[in-house]
Length: 159
Image 1: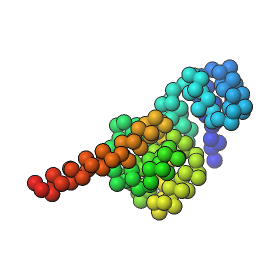
Image 2 (image 1 turned 180 degrees about the horizontal axis):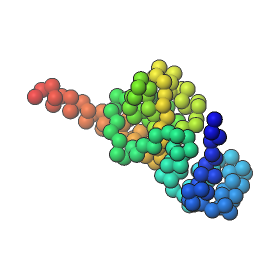
Image 3 (image 1 turned 45 degrees about the vertical axis):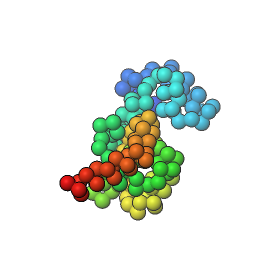
């Protein structure tokens, strides 16, 4: 079985950061207990999108761009808004009887277990940026989105 590489090592190999930067970020990570990726982004050493790309590579997960992904509202709303906000996760589609969920932290087993319990479906995590997930939550759970969907349904059934 192949050993999974650590995020810092992958970033070094990809030339995204230098060893001295990684060591400083690791020190901050140890002191603050914040995730390494979060520290690197907050220090301006790497972007959130680059972290998502590397996380997807590191974990062999799908990397989704929510700005370019069509999500059916009923699938997005298969979990309550509060759960989506708590875990920064949004269901995006169903594939092979699994609910694919875009997450900023695909290693959060509590989130995966809770979403599995709520939806009664097996969960397949995918990686997206925190910013895109927050934006998607606002879009798919907003009253305006509901009103637009109702208007569209009315038009379909009255034409």
